[in-house]
Length: 438
Image 1 (cartoon, rainbow, N blue to C red):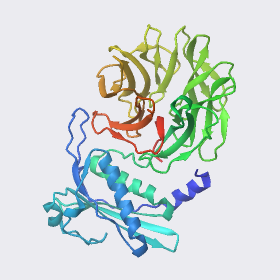
Image 2: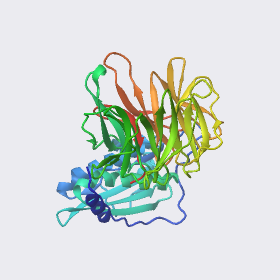
Image 3: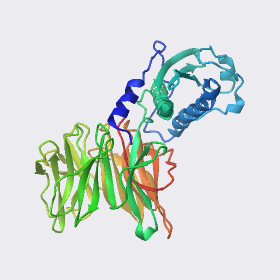
Image 4: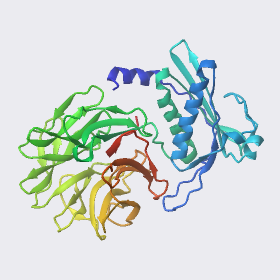
């Protein structure tokens, strides 16, 4: 677990020097209304380095390539096809050699160890068709931070070639499960978005559910079964310090931060029903937002903080509703066949993701905030719990497999419904929540 001082030291050591070609164009066009996207062929030779850093240069190049191809927008050119084999970061490529093998983008890089404990990682992004450099950056950091630098490099390339912010230098908090299916131990865990660097935030002595990141990424709010009733807690992931959010007599659950990070909205059980409340984290004042004999839960703020989407069975079945952030003017927005749950507002504000259950199957879908334009992205035995990447172009969710030994795994899918991928985690994993950009 990173302490605050370690994090600040890392960020202070990370310096980027940027150069771009004037009026260079985006090479990848993203159209979310289209189901087919032609991935851009990109070549990424291993980054050059001194003898002991050659392996590190290869590892950084592999992570950058995995990030980009994992987005579904890029296709790696087979390294066995490379004609130009030796290419320094400051050397002008033989562009004809790269065009001949179909590369429409080329990344070259180097890794140099300086003063013992400092790495200088440098890369260049080239357009072989226009025969020009379109981006160049270098970073200084510590050797153990190489993987994060690779994600930052991938983010820079992704943004330069697509015009969209990248999402690779992010993390996912989730529930890691172990043990037999009828007696699972559930711990809060955190990992890089690609499944690397898993660490645990709780010890498994109490069941935990629904972790959610704060907008700044330092805190996680979640529900824990401690004592007589499950309650909502706040955890500082840098220090490990946690605190109870309200010692209520009944269960509190389904927490989520406001966009400014100053409030947590949640559900509180009241007899056989549940209503939505919001707590100001500075004053600890609790305010009621709904007051119905139904179960109102799973609230999620719009990015500007003015509205909240939530699920409720006030109409007889689980459906999605949108109301003002003060609880005013609730309006139903879901009208398809089946039951809707776990809504979460896109960070772009244009879509709401949800889980939909019907005909014995669970689907992950999106709709506009007014309920129009519903699209199902993926369907399976048990899909649930969508969470947005910070650029609003990709969703993570978990899928439960059937059978006596079945368990959950985390998947990602883009908002066109294509490029569904399993995140490689060496544990049963559920309830993902994507962090903001670090």
